[in-house]
Image 1: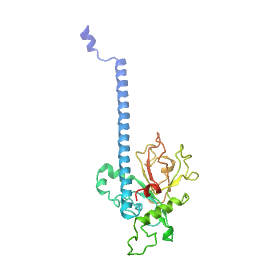
Image 2: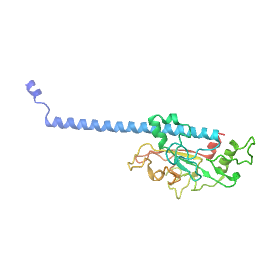
Image 3: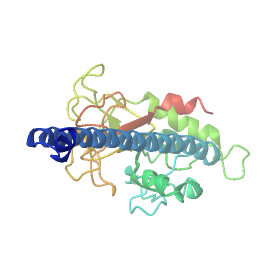
Image 4: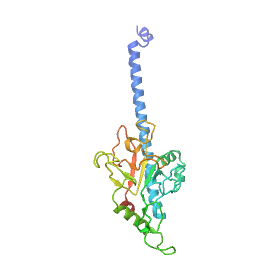
Length: 253
């Protein structure tokens, strides 16, 4: 009787239960894989942003200006006076060795970069942070001609200005800094901003998520408005934003 029972195999009920169990295991496995993949992508983006920010500060300390954005995605800065938002000029920043690593190349190339460029015909009133210019009335050949003091003056000038929407700025986060709206809630201008997408979490074909960052373009033809760094992640938003204020950059000089 025992042998006959074993030879009968699975019943339809047992087979159905087995299929359900297999389906549940598969679903859980896919969810775990997706979560792990998303976490890995987030860590890569965070690492890329940290390296980019550090390189930006070093560049400013050496060159007494910030780099211009890259607007044709070749990794080199493009310094037309109107260029305020593009992608990170990682080659200009000396990040070639980092970008040769496949994951980091994707990360660096996908970082968007905005810089404050409030130019003025009077050097004493010029706050274009991407231009090396003497702003302290020194002459060519003088010891202090085009040095850190000139960049610090530009930062101080920018710090003293009222916030304007013709320069890169951040809007609210919907919580602590109010309504997320580029037209009605200009929270502040910044010295520079870096934005990195993690994954296209809302699957709309644009790597950046949300109503604010989705308007950014790599060729300086889009918005100057960035979502707040404090905007919380949710099921439809996972972008990473890093900003450096005028006062923070001044603290490095």
